[in-house]
Image 1 (tube, rainbow, N blue to C red):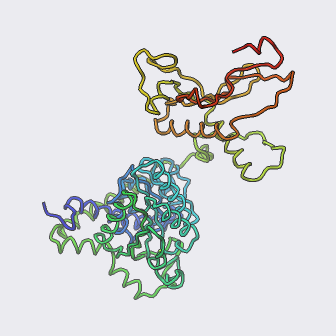
Image 2 (image 1 turned 120 degrees about the vertical axis):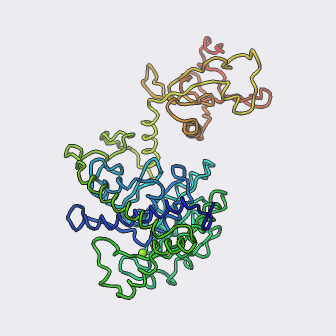
Image 3 (image 1 turned 60 degrees about the vertical axis):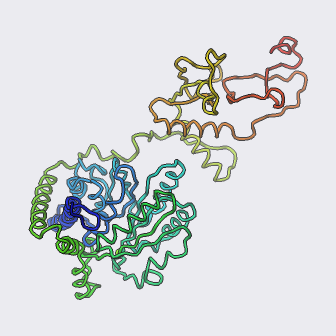
Length: 494
Ligand SMILES: [Mg+2]
């Protein structure tokens, strides 16, 4: 079967369809702005080739994406529906991103793992690196994509992110789409040395690629290599795609005020769509007629979809307060919690986190089984084994038990606890490990100089104990039993 730079014809046709679809969305959205039907737009035109090359190399739904406002083609390439772009742009009720609340071009998609960015530019870098760090900790083979324009690389977050990612060899790819302008400021005035590629030299473990981002095939090669090394755990990459900005920075901008006409004309000659068509026609894999057909289909499709989107409902007034908080948290105001002692900030933060954790685990239960805990440390259970080995269904017990007399809640977990219903196994194990770690913070033993008349009340519900082999001969056992000093009855209690 005929191929061009490794791509089959049907793959190339799909890339082309996505290129012209994104371009047509830009054109249509600008028309809708002029008609007063929306209020703001940031275009992708000129960046489509680089973004679709990126999209070809990730696994949608498995990898993670932290795009910026100009990445419409990337999202289309990953599988976002053009109708959803229009619903978001027109702020309709069925907009799956935010129900019509988010600023246009703040892309997100839960199932495709596309995470919405904040409007302050550059904030996405540290989010992406944090995400990549968790992928590494959890030994996942997932890769994280994060992007921005070249202007945003002046922000401190970019360099913090590069430092962390390089030091930890994180599976993250920084895609810097360099269209030479940070709004109206040319890169020669915005960036040290006039080149992001040169500026990021010196970070250990960081691979750098400088490509013609208007050339889909060249950019694709860079992403191929970067994704491969990220998935193998070798380290992060920066890909600087040199692209063109065919439309102004945003619908609020007019680039003719600060760019020369000849400069704009030069950019038009580097249009990634024209370059893609040229490469495919010269490679004799797609004809101009086939391209014309796709363009016409896409133009009609966008017109129809825009008309459909306009007919969809606006969000009702009664929904104004929806989506302010996660449905998984409780937004109710709680009583002001005053801590009487003066505490340092870090303790106050830990206190607040501990309250969050308490709320999270209040209604959870876990199965308890010695069979489980012993098997975790490699012990095989003999047939007919003695106390505690579960050969039947393990009991399900709450993580928190309330003391019947004092009303005091206590954490009731240990090495036997496993499989919290409603959570997948990894998540359950992680939470139980965190709780165990938290509960086992020093001091773990308490010493008391006994005096006649002292009383100890032993509440097994507050006891954390570990299921593990016990060395009876060499290891001191703590609190084997309870005595009340001077009381003959309890002195004899076992
Ligand atoms: Mg720029």
